[in-house]
Structure formats: C-alpha cells, structure tokens
Length: 207
Image 1 (cartoon, one colour):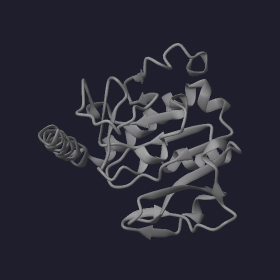
Image 2 (tube, helix red, strand yellow):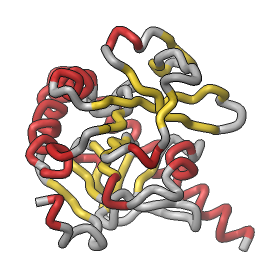
Image 3 (cartoon, rainbow, N blue to C red):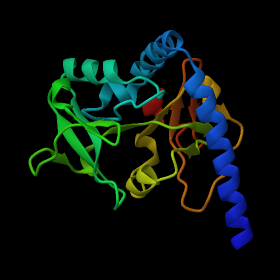
C-alpha cells in the first residue's frame, strides 16, 4: 500500500509539473481571449443563468481569468461569493460574499481575498454554482490542483451538479492519477468544449 501511495504521489507531482509548465508558458493575450470564450460558453449553461448565488475563484497566476466573471455576475444582480483561506495551516476554506470587486483588498500568500467577518460568511448549502480552478482535468471530471486539498475537503458534501471547472483546453488529459480522496467535477468548460461527468450528462439543467 505504501509503495502504491508513493507511486500515486510521484505521478501527481509529475503531472502537476508538466501541466503547470504549459499553463505558465501560455501568453497573456491568448489567456485573455480564451478566458473570455470560456465565460461566453459558461453563460449559455442554464444552470449559470438560473443560479442566484455563485462561488467564483479569484484567478491566481496563470489560471483561467475570472475578474470579468465576478464583475458580470454582480452586474446581473447575482450573489457572488469567493473562497477565502483564513488560516493556511489548518487547510480550512470558507465562502465569503462580496458586493463589489473593490472588497477584494487583501493578498494572502499571493492569493487575492476580501476581509472575512461573521456577517459575510456564506453557507455552502446556499450556493447554486461553484467555479473551480485546476492545473489539469481529465475526461472523467477529476481535477489536479496544487496538492493542498482545499477544494477536495470543501466539496466533500457538495452536489456534483453544482461544480464547474474552468480550464484552457490544453489542460485536459484522458486520465489523471487519482487517490481515494480525490473528487470529480460535474462539468468542465474550456474555450473549445464542455465536458460533463456521466452522472450529470443527462441533467436537463445543463442544456
């Protein structure tokens, strides 16, 4: 079992390094064009249109850009919440509501965050749609992140149909190395296609 876990970690490390290298080399103009195309496709999904409360990650580094998604959702009078890590040691993530983009005024370990208080923390049960970043995704919906497990822990009791990964198409691979704690994403949106997990493929809300 130990040898298997060591091999899994090695394969994940190798895949993470490979896909992160490709993503970091993606030029800024192409990233912006593709991010806009990804959002255009996302907006056509009826679940996005019907969602009252969206959790939108605040793009970091070479991730798919989400700034204009935040701005557009606020303009559409949707409730927007963003992920916040209050303490990076305990790996605990919370959802915090913002009213305007200017509330994102902190930089914690390089990640943009708003201030957190007892009045702006939102229950995950009230969130209709969750946009999730990743270094790579596979055709079964599994995701490779930075390895800390923030999203896997937070999504343990969240419906698969609420989760959408945003990725550039070169971040998609046939199959990723996965462990027993890894959770699939319901849908992945790239600039070229929409990939749905088989469990939500026939859900009419995604048409």
